[in-house]
Every structure is written in structure tokens, then in C-alpha cells.
Image (cartoon, rainbow, N blue to C red):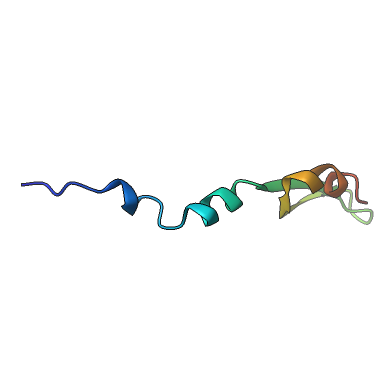
Length: 57
């Protein structure tokens, strides 16, 4: 017989699950002034701060 998973097993901490939804992974292309090649920088940013991160130089 197969085991039945309980609904509580999916989310152990509801507060932590809700908190994680306010963070976003942002990937930005940055051009090297020396070679002209692009590199990619990624960061995990609060969803309210995404535009500030993208406008950085």
C-alpha cells in the first residue's frame, strides 16, 4: 500500500513560506569596460528593491 502524505508535511512553517515570496532573483548583464564582454551578476533582492538594483552602475 502507498503512503498518504498529509497536507501539513508540505509546508512546515507557513510564516517562512509567506516570507520567501517577497524575494526575487535578479540577473543583470554587466559590460566590462576593458574587454567589452558581458558578464552576468545575480542577486536575491527584496521585491520592493528590484528597480534600485537594476539602476545601479
